[in-house]
Length: 377
Image 1: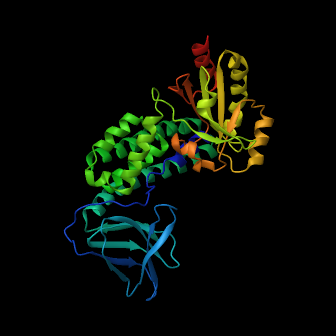
Image 2 (image 1 turned 120 degrees about the vertical axis):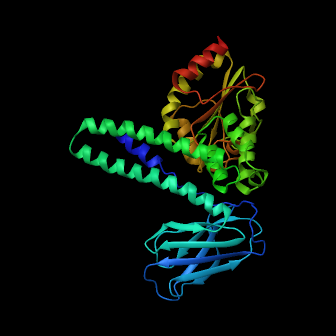
Image 3 (image 1 turned 180 degrees about the horizontal axis):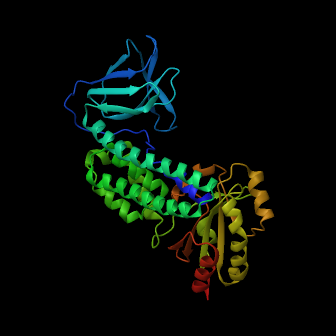
C-alpha cells in the first residue's frame, strides 16, 4: 500500500527545469509578452518575470511590470530563448513561459497560473503540446489516488489491486510519452529538459540516452542543458563497465591524503556512502562480511563519504566497524570524487580489478559476495 503511494508521488511529469536554448524565430528585433489575467486584480498589481541562475539554480528577477485593466506587457530582447516564470504579487503559483524573440501571447486565470495558455512562438507551441498530454496523465494519476483512498477506507482489496494494475499502465504511458516526444521533437527545449531529467535519474542505459541526445538538433545540443547532458554522458562513459576508473586523491579521517592508485588490490571496491544514508548503513554489515572473508585474498575497499561533518563520518566508521580505507572532502554531493564518478545518489559502488578497470557497478548483498568470490577464488 505504501509503495503504491510512493509510486503515485513519483508520477510528477510537469517538472520543468528552467534553462536556456537557441532557436530561430520570425522576429529578430526582440520579444513582446502580451499578457491577460482573468480574475479581479487591482490596477498596479506587480507581475514579475524570473528565471533560474545557472549556478545556484535559484530564481532571479529579470523584469517587473504592472497589471492595468487585466493586462500586462513585457518588452525586451533575447539573444536566445530562455525558460522563465511569470509570478503575480500576492497570487499563488507561477506560469512557465519561454522568452524568445517574437510576439508571445499569454493568458491565465488568476487562481490557476500553472494552467496558462502561451502562444505565438515555435518553442512555446511545442511546450503547450507537451503540457497538454502531461496534464492529462497527471489528472488521471490524481483521480486514481482518490479512488485508491476510497477503496482503502472501504477495505475493497479487489478495487485496490485493479487500481495498482491501472497505475502501472499509466506509468508506462507516461514514460513512453516523454521519450516519444523527444524523438518527435528534436528541436524543442522541452526535449532537452526531459533528457536532462533522464540522465540525472539514470532512467535509461547510457547508450540509449546517447542515441536520443545525438538525434537532437545542433542548436539544442549547444544550449546550457544540452552542454550539461554532454558533460554528464562523458562522465558516465568514463565510469562504465570496461572503462578505467578515474584516479583520485582525498583526505583520510586522520588528515593524510590517500590516492586510489596507492591502495588498489587484486579487486577494489569504491564505496560511496554517508553516515546519514540509511540504505548505506543497512548495507554496511554485508560489506564488512565480504571484506573479512576476502581481504586476505586481495580485496581492498575505499569508502568515499558524502558527509558534511567529520564527527558524523568518523563515528559511523567506528560504529559500523568499517576497518578499511576511507576518504572524504566533507562536501556532500559536491564532493569532487562523487562528481568525477557521476554519483548523484547513494549507496553507489564500483568494483575494479588490479589494473583499475571497472568490472561491476552497484552490487549489493549476495550479488557483491558472489562477484568477489568469482574474481578471487
